[in-house]
Length: 358
Image (tube, rainbow, N blue to C red; front, side, top):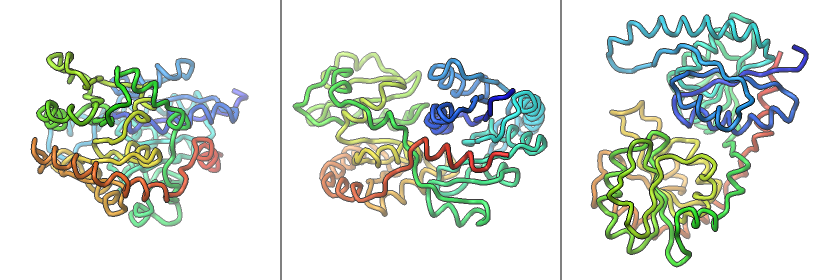
């Protein structure tokens, strides 16, 4: 194989795929043959397959990394071992100059196999504190990039660098008029976009829908409710448009939004920041996660970019009150956001990764 190649890995949620989606075209433009290793069951197969049908995708076995007791904790290590062997064979076949991992449990066997194959690995951490997959991967990696400066205190100084956020170029190419048209909306009322991540959020969906009769008097509402969470009983409600999940339409919908209510995954909140969108963040509770979204949200609140409503405090009334506070603080938030540094482009990130190729 004469052309230089690179393997990307990461999956489980859209957040573990979005950066790979962003940098993939830049890597191709730089002359690299790009391959992707993920899970057959993960969202990454669908996302990469739809956006890049010509990129070879390899599905491997991967166990789930759990912080709680489960009988599967005794069997999943064997899945990881099987996945590592599968990844090793793929790496030896593709012969990449470097592997880039965005995290998620599927990346662990790939990173471990890369070490045994003698291929350098660069990993990326989006949250304030490293996730479990990246903690396991760190000893096998040549370098780790972070979004938050605060993350560096948790990592070896000699192989960690903060790059700041990396934003997809197409995000800035969204069109407000197209976004409004997709929803059948006008310019007469502000637009509130509510999203619960790629998998949706039942508690966020419920809090919004309980307040819909009152909220649609003040806003036009775009609701990204998550797969399987579409509610047909609201189809005829004027000023309310729900989508289970969107891909290419997202930039247009974000540009149409005046305010955003969302979970606090780092990829999403940095996109909102780059577009100067006032945001109300409802992070996943510590009972449902390792608490990374809580740290992300609280840091954004301290920096003046967001209002925060903890999931344990989420009720019909607290949701309505928090949305009101958000609208009151719009001018202040936008002014603060406009002073932030320019995010990295995917091309800049691709070149940073390629510094570590063999």
